[in-house]
Image (cartoon, rainbow, N blue to C red; front, top):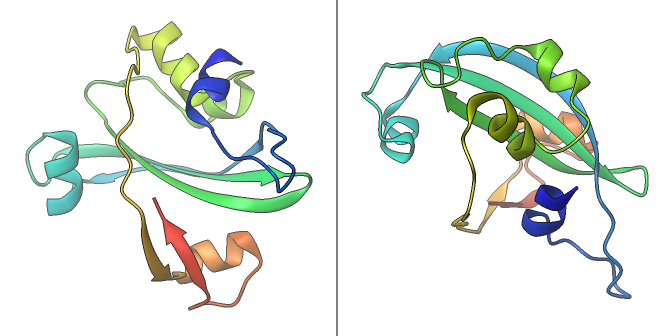
Length: 132
């Protein structure tokens, strides 16, 4: 709960904060493309874990979360861990892998919704969204 409260700062028009309901959409393995490698500070082509979540607020799909994690650092993490967790992903990583997230740097840009995000959010492909 602390991690969600500290790092999830969306509020409604009245300023009320609601914690999201999280649904695991997919979990898999892949290789780091150039952008992912740079952000994770790993070699291009290194193994990564690919996680996709849907976060809903007040029953409405609100955030399509695409996460990449270095596979070597989080060896053993699986879809069951992600689906069964009671708290945030950050709390799971801290408890299971002794990784503590203390700061998050976010960059925002307006983009056309990619097909996968549009499907998850129930909006038309190409609809304007914020990429964070």
